[in-house]
Amino acid sequence: MVDVLLGLQWGDEGKGKIVDYFAGKYDVIARFQGGPNAGHTLYVNGKKVVLRTIPSGVFHDKTINLIGSGVVLDPVAFKQECEQIAALGIDLKKNLFIADRTHIIVPSHRALDKASELSKGNDKIGSTLKGIGPAYMDKTGRNGLRVGDVLAADFQARYEKLKLKHQHLLDGYNFNEDISEWETEFFDAVEFLKSMNIVNGEYFLNEKLKAGQQVLAEGAQGSMLDVDFGTYPFVTSSNTVSAGACTGLGIAPRWIRDVIGVTKAYCTRVGSGPFPTELYDETGDKLRAAGNEFGAVTARPRRCGWIDLVALRYTSMLSGVTKLVMTKSDVLDAFDELYACTAYEINGVKTENVPYQINEADIKPVWEQFNGWSEPTANCKQYDELPLEMKTFVSAVEKYLEVPVAYVSNGPGRDQILEK
Ligand code: GDP
Ligand code: IMO
Ligand code: MG
Image (cartoon, rainbow, N blue to C red; front, top):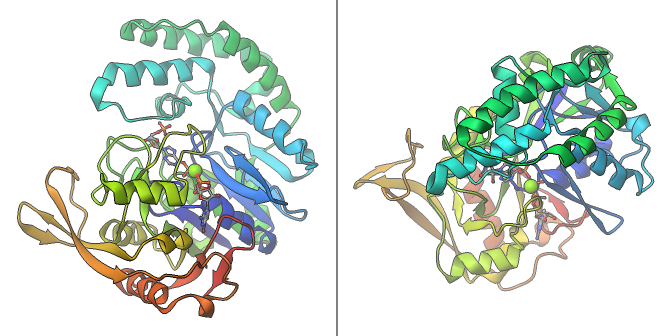
């Protein structure tokens, strides 16, 4: 069977840490969408590792990892990541597989990402500029190159054809960037990619499922960044909701068992776009400092605010979440009182639904206040040891979302997680 683990907010919920925690229980960990815009942080033997394209199961001996066809892979970023992991003594030739239908990010995709953002001025998405949007555009536009193509004798010619198309687009933007250095790196990385395990991902996974193996599908980004249901156009270019696991891996819905939704005990967003519970005051700054909220990929300060239960109930509905994991609860130790948004007031009308367009100017969060707790929680080893006030907060979240909180994560470390 397949369990899907995904972020329910705007990304960076702590998915990497949680996947790493669960990975030993699964035969396969499979990434189903996104690309090197993701930054999933794990601590392995006390050492921090940030994974971008490679699934967060690579540090478990008996777990196989698959980069599914719904992912977009930048060979350059991928090679760097592989080298970093190999230096930690992991043999990726044994435990990493790449679906041949996975689309490739080429250097001119990165240039196009920049050009597009520049042309938007103040309306920019705040993209990580890793070429994600342009690569998915070529996928749906039926022009893309895929991992399987690197094995073709005429790969270079196919690449040149795509580059020419991109050159026309870049000319249209009046954007000039010398990508020749990136190209040298790219072709070097393509040779490296050829040496890795390239497989037909859908047969690979379905055969394992038929044989009774257990699969964890690892989501990237967060549900509010979903291209269909997120805060469009301030979203990423893939389906981050659970349905994306089926299309991104080539598996049927009937294989899906649990959908594990990860949420922080508060909320963050990096990049532009609406964020109804954002705090622009010193409380927001305090959350950023206490939670060390700086991007794992771009180091940008993350925007911070209280937990948004309206958005969470929406994203939990979209993915059919069966279990919640609440991360970074320890960050709230620093607060005497905390808040959760339980409704939006839009032009004087209260709603518990996410509207068509969230326009920050129009939305006033309706808050429920909770008492803080005055003791540190990062060293608690059992859920029962947590302060009563924190348990009250956790219960309120489960009640609002009508989904149980199965785990509370009380620190970045591998062992800092409490089963409820
Ligand atoms: P991901 O993209 O969802 O995997 O999340 P990121 O790795 O981008 O960001 C999560 C950050 O929070 C990382 O720096 C983690 O090490 C850290 N983290 C994860 N869980 C916890 C937790 O329970 N408490 C604290 N304090 N930090 C956590
Ligand atoms: P993980 O997997 C947080 C955001 C960017 C930008 C928007 C579009 O670590 O949770 P893109 O590069 O996709 O064109 O950017 O999406 N974004 C993320 N925010 N975590 C991520 O991944 C993100 N991946 C993209 O900041 O606002
Ligand atoms: Mg991240």
